[in-house]
Amino acid sequence: MNILLAAFRHKQLRLQFRASPEHVVNIYERPGEFLAPAELDRLVAQCRTVVRACLAGQDLDYGLFDPRTDAWSRCVITLVCRSADGAPVAFNAMPQLAVKRAGRDEHVLHLGLVMVDPSERSGGLSWILYGLTCFALFLRGGLRPLWVSSVTQVPAVVGMVAETFSNVFPAQDATRQSFAHRHLAHQIMKRHRAAFGVGDDAGFDPDRQIITDAYTGGSDNLKKSFDVAAKHRAERYNEYCLRELDYGRGDDVLQIGAIDLGAGQRFLSRSVPRSALPQLAVQALVLATGAVVAPLIQWLDASTHLGRLRPAR
Image (cartoon, rainbow, N blue to C red):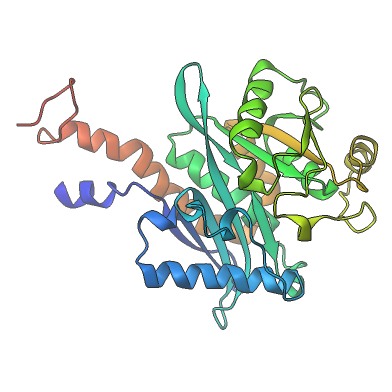
């Protein structure tokens, strides 16, 4: 009993997953809090390698790579490496943004910075970088809905967010802006601009959730023209971005949605390759065990302290 309990008492998610014969995925939740300094330095160096491959040798100096912040202790990092030689080829850094809802402290998972080595962009990694980590955290949270946000000017990403998650505003045809959308957007823009490289002088339209002149806070190297930005296969998302965003000025859209049971089902049925389903099922079982079975085991263990419900012996 005690061995089982010890296995599930980790506060942070750390997961290794073989997504295909070519790629291995590692997910680290707030690695700055638990990785040894040498391990953390190696992870930082691997992510910087991907950044330089994407930006023709240039670096980024905001968010994750700003030495003045504790971003590595607030982000969930998804790193994809080649199986053959262990070389890093892609990563996603998802900050956990602190917000208040109904008087409670919560977090919004921001889809964050995604970088894919140009030589790997046809490798089918998008389901890993945009969906896998969210799905893992959703399972880890006991299947409770998890709010997510995204800031981008890329039509392909706008469409991906709208089609992957539930209750997304803006750009999801069936969804209108709710109080929750507006309230979360207000808090994100007030408290967390640095997480996605938007300066204090950038404007914000709360009705459309559009950030104007967004590329002034360290993310200058990511600014794109509409012609260069990757397009979505559904033309309505391309038309939406062209209509709503001023690419010359450098606008972004702030999308807010949620991962819930419906989004999880869509992720499994539409995004995950069939070849990856057995491995994903094993990892999902482990995470679900930690979220559902472990609390039951802990309840049955009379030596476990459960506050007012059961004092420790």
